[in-house]
Length: 160
Image (tube, rainbow, N blue to C red; front, side, top):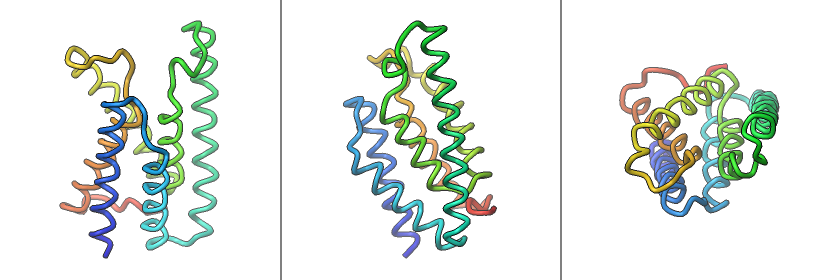
């Protein structure tokens, strides 16, 4: 059953990528379903109290990152945050924060951000957009990690 759920999860992540690239908007339901599946899979491995504590800690990290982005956007870029950081990007940050224990979240969050920036630089000449489709590229990164981990089982994603 977990293989079926992980397959659905990967399809949801691909849908997030597709919508973010094509429409620059993602249906809220995709974020919700992705979060539910990630939490369910996480609860198969660790206790609900650990999931709750990790989620609160991770959301605190996301809040700090968004605060720093807001200050940077206002002072350095001279633009409001909503022009430099999309709501979908913030929602995907929360999906990651709720979906994984803290250690895994920090690694996935960091590397998915670097992956997104690098991929945007490579694809920029072919894209008709000026900003990074962050939620979509992070969803792609997570889908790749999940496929590789399911295929080769190189890391335990739910260790605490």
